[in-house]
Length: 202
Image (cartoon, helix red, strand yellow):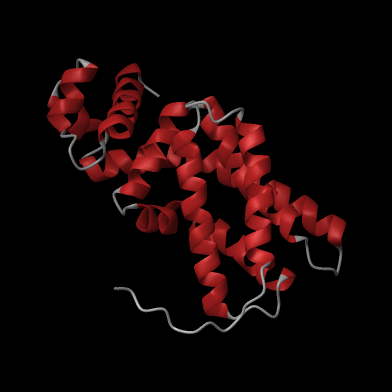
C-alpha cells in the first residue's frame, strides 16, 4: 500500500473519529493529510469508498478472528449448543483487540453508531459473520421469540459500540471491559421473556 494511501486512511480515520463522518469533508482530509484532492479521488474515488476502505481494513482481521473462535467452539461443543457466554466472548473480544491496537478505529465505530450509520456499515462489513453468531445464539436460546432475539442483539451491538468508544477514558484495559460486557450481556440474553403491560409515555 502506498504511503499516500496510508496517510489518507490514517488521517480520515482520525478526523471521522474525532468530528464525525458527516461534518468532515474531503478537503478537510486532504488539508490535514498534506495531499491534494486528486489523490483521494485517485485512490478511493469518493468519500463513501474511503469510509468503506477504512472499515474494511480492520473488519477483515476482526471477522477472521471471530470465525476462527467460532470454529473452535463448534468443534468443542459437538452436537450441543454453544454456551451464550462463549458466543459473546468469541464475538466481542476480537473487536476489543482491534480497538486496543487502534484506538482511532474504535472512535470511528462509535461515531458511526452515534450518527446512525452503523446498521448499514454492519450489514456490509460484518453481516455474514454476524449471521453465523446469530444462528448459534438461536440454538443456545431456542425458546426465545425471533423479535425478542433481534431486539436483544440490537441492544448488545449498541452496548458494544458505546464501550468501544469509551476505551481509553479511564474505562480500564480492553480485556477487562470485554469480560464485563460478556457478564452483562449474557445476563440480558438469558433474562426471561415476560409479557408486560403497555407503558404509556407522557
